[in-house]
Image 1: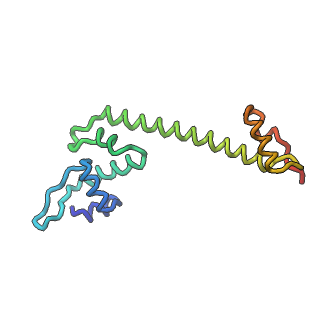
Image 2: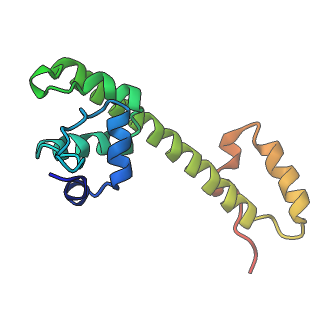
Image 3: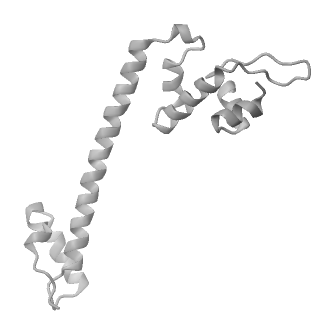
Length: 147
């Protein structure tokens, strides 16, 4: 397969394929008489694994560690451990993001529902004081603004 064919099969730019080759993530293919690279059909699958791993947050070095050139030499246990570790990291990040979102949503609700008659600046001072006790910052503890 020429590099253009591999690019079509994987959705990767030819420059990205050459980059992965230069980084040692895929073996350099033999060259045809005209100098074109002649990739094995198997390389498309390996490139998809590399691309998916990068999108999942693996560094090139991490990918290099679990992706040997010869498929028969893959370290099943090492690969499984790497993937399970990354899933746990993603779950921790999701939990952190959810907590951050909830905190921001609470702040938005408290800012939007400021007590009538106080300025935005005074409301912020009130909210800063409430931050000392997050239980008091709950939207349910603040009255809805008067209509």
